[in-house]
Length: 295
Image 1 (spheres, rainbow, N blue to C red):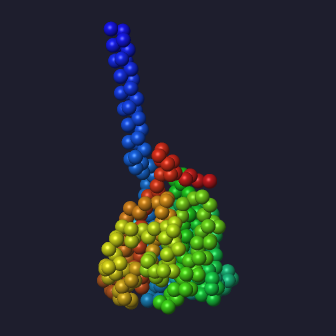
Image 2: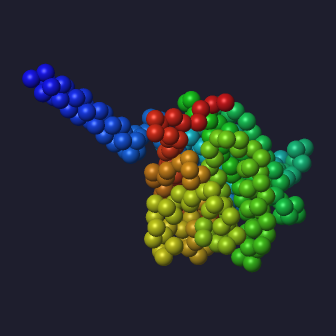
Image 3: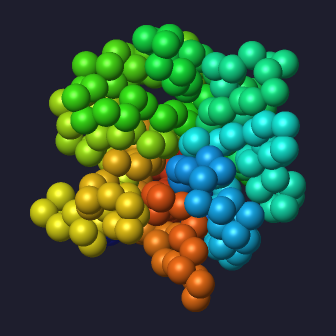
């Protein structure tokens, strides 16, 4: 009887051990539920002050106020003697912080470039001229704090001609060098007007570490550019050249959609480009779901 009792005791303990081990394996195999809110980003080429900027501005502001993205990447941002910096105007209206990069001298009356806006604290910022220097292109960087997380955001605007693939390739190399020098061990997002489709040869070096958020969520987009393009069809043939690239081991795209793609009743368009909104989620870095925190 004592031997039988011992066997039953051993069997129970063994079964309990198996149950615990099975639960642990299942927990490791299941993706962790997101412990943080999704992050949202909007990118838009402003078309500087063309096509009646005073009429276009309210259309842009109305949509950005409705969306309240965490970050806004703007290209073709202009400021001159009679035009306050467009990014500052938008940031002030939204209550956002902003940074601006331009190859024009700081004391120049006319400055043209890129901007990043955010409603979160800025931890670091930097920018770089992209070669060839006579093309007046920059890469802009912000490190921002979203809750207890820190992420890097980059914004750029590459060379525009269809025949300029070699120039864009050089600029992509400079952009990646800049990211390597400034990102630290924190995850990164790259947005902007790349003047090329995501699958263009000159953009392929990005694919080593980054994924095309829109293309990932809309795998048939390349076959239907009229429905998925970011160029305003009232100005251009359909093409998707405005992108958000997410660090592939750090983020998962949740939503990507074209915005600011309608004219108002008077026929005024927000820009000659449509906007792109992307929502994405930070991956857990291990089985217990820890994420990079502010450093």
